[in-house]
Length: 424
Ligand SMILES: Cc1cc2nc3c(=O)[nH]c(=O)nc-3n(C[C@H](O)[C@H](O)[C@H](O)COP(=O)(O)OP(=O)(O)OC[C@H]3O[C@@H](n4cnc5c(N)ncnc54)[C@H](O)[C@@H]3O)c2cc1C
Ligand SMILES: NC(=O)c1ccc[n+]([C@@H]2O[C@H](COP(=O)([O-])OP(=O)(O)OC[C@H]3O[C@@H](n4cnc5c(N)ncnc54)[C@H](OP(=O)(O)O)[C@@H]3O)[C@@H](O)[C@H]2O)c1
Image (cartoon, rainbow, N blue to C red; front, side, top):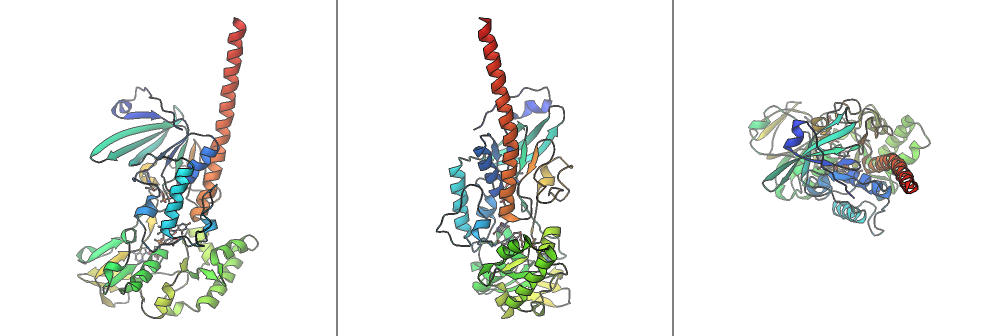
């Protein structure tokens, strides 16, 4: 698969680190997006290298998600190209099943990422027309610096690469346990404890439900507004219904219908402190990337009072939180379900294609290809289905160039061979 040559260059930096020429693209990240791209490139006969900072594939799923997590969307919207989920998987596979699927995907397409290699910088060298990707590889206590040189760079580091941890007044003085949702596994150790869950996205809602199920006493902070939709309406996935309607109707009408159906299924949620945004759920997703909450049981616990909804936070004090309405709550622990961000601006030295927030400037379906051999997969704000569609486009695009050049090279070699023979 890989074809490495040592490069010789007069640049001083080249002499300080191992330098590897990659015949084909370098893919940064071995999550679902990186794996899908690698598999599609393989189908095109294009060699590649996948660099992954963790020691396993799909590190978000394996290391930074809670135990009770299931896919929120039906399985047909979450499978990667060229390998459907096993038939016996349920409609909404569990995290364990999804990881099993990804591992079988990597095996099936013979994807062997270079683990423990964190990309520190990547920049395009105008003079050579090549990408220079610098990594630090750590295995145990040994640390190696490597530079990969390649023609194509595929960014697959994900929309959720870094945790967002807000700086809230007094949090340092709180004294109890404070964790981000990415470190939460289950509510088992919180039994009988008062837990403040900050944030009401899908993570905050589901962690609050999990805490309830383990007999903890959660309060959820809803500082602004949120769209809560049932995961299913009349036995049909709400997401699937929305996709179907979007094919025929304008987005504003889809939103109106979704909100009407949600009202029929869930009633008026505003009376529980869950104010709806003024913009509809699909419009909000497509313009601001804010995902609606697909309810899997938290709302019933809010209705019953087992999960308390509280307004924004003013400040923390020792063992206590003061809310914007002046109310003070005694709490034992805090879980920050305050979201994630892209890490692209920290390592990619490029500003034409990617914007400051680490997402491509062009939105779906145009955000997969930049100039100078740069590609992005999995930044569509459309979850796994968006990643699959990017991966197929990227592989097709690189595959076309690859095949053309391979054909030309073959023709040149054959012509040269003929000339040599005719000279004898
Ligand atoms: C709790 C949770 C639940 C979710 N559930 C769903 C769902 O049900 N359905 C859905 O469609 N989406 C869901 N998502 C969205 C999720 O982002 C996608 O499912 C999917 O993981 C995206 O794949 P990815 O490969 O783009 O990113 P990731 O899975 O984040 O993979 C990126 C990889 O890049 C690696 N990496 C990052 N930086 C570097 C670097 N500098 N050098 C080398 N490697 C690097 C990371 O270690 C990681 O392995 C969920 C997200 C979260 C947080
Ligand atoms: N089963 C699943 O499929 C599943 C489960 C979990 C997550 N996910 C996905 O994972 C991604 C991330 O979801 P997420 O829920 O972790 O993050 P998110 O959707 O970005 O939600 C973050 C929440 O934190 C709030 N927040 C941020 N800073 C705050 C502060 N200082 N004080 C109070 N509230 C604050 C935000 O409020 P504002 O809105 O006011 O900013 C928002 O409610 C999404 O795409 C989601 O769909 C999927």
